[in-house]
Amino acid sequence: MATDFEWTRQQFTALPDVIYLDGNSLGLLPKQAAARVARTVTDEWGTMAISGWNRAGWMAAPRQLGDRIGRLIGAEPDHVVVGDTLSIKVYQALAAATRMTDRKVILSDTGNFPSDLYMAEGLISLLDGYELRTVAPDQVAQALTPDVGILMLTEVDYRTGRRHDMAALTQAAQTNGTITVWDLAHSAGATDVNVSAVDADFAVGCTYKFLNAGPGAPAFIYVNPRHADTAHPALSGWLGHKAPFAFDQAYAAGDGIDRMRVGTPPVIQNAALDAALDVWDQVDMADVRAASMALSDHFIAEVEARTNQLTLASPRDAAQRGSQVSFHFAEGYAAMQAVIARGVVGDFRAPDIMRFGITPLYITADDLTRAAEIIADVIEHDLWDRPEYQIRNAVT
Image (cartoon, rainbow, N blue to C red; front, side, top):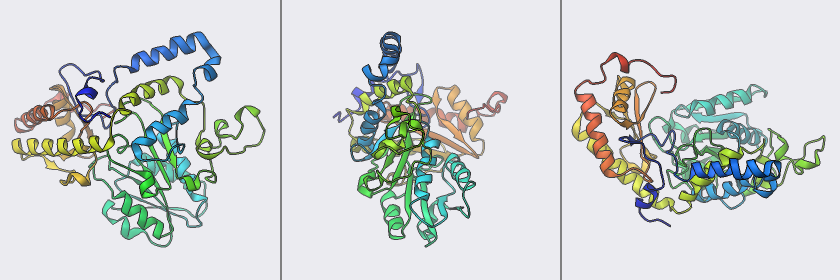
């Protein structure tokens, strides 16, 4: 395993004259990804055609990739599978959880990613008597009342970077008889999450952020071993069937994690994920987490030393945040556009969050010092106050 990140920095395609602090939204391109995708297209699809499902291992890839992601999130072997989108995996986990309890309250928090809440709303609209209840992030433990059947949380808040205490909340949920569903979108490849150690029931996540698998990359789902052969696959797609190519008229759920497969694997996107995981296979998450905390502390100190107009939105204690740093600024959108124009790429989250991802695999302390200088220059000299920076893009 690599113990420093000089090697990993060489594995990514850097953007010229850019300090890239948006890996928490879309990771940089691994240098080997283009060749891996090209090989899949030309050498596999191009020469094997349909036989690639067997000869090139396309059908087996979701389980193999799942195990490699599983190592990064502390999952047991054979309990993670890749495919579909994160919203679909959220829906699968929630739907399965509703069959494990008679209670009809799904508890979440107001800092959760809206798509997760939307999926919960859509699911319960098809069920009788269910309620989605949201509370402030710091009130979740107190809200675990006896009527709560499912606890659905994103471990790291997408706006502020605040990190839930996953172990404590999972234990509290179990004590309360509540099923847990954890979204690891901002945890996988960013924090030292360990789903088996905390005994989470379900976990889901995406691969295009810190894992660097590219835009539209597939999601993953983890199912605790004690549920693996009983979790109800509400989205009963043909590849979750016990024998997909028997083409039975009736659905019979597959064994273990295979029952959480739904549709045809995204073969070309899986090739990009495979290349990205070649880098992650050489990295220890404890080292990544330690570097992330040190780098984010450094970044906060550098920004605050240069301007007092930004208010830290992330927890000041590195142990209580994920791998991002966020600041409040009333003109945050325009300021971020001005910062991007000067070569520091972060992003904006409504209503006033300037968000910067800290990705140790390709970001250094020197990068963050220079980024802080540029950010402070934009803020202190009101460089954001130009018409071109007020125009809202479709993607912020």
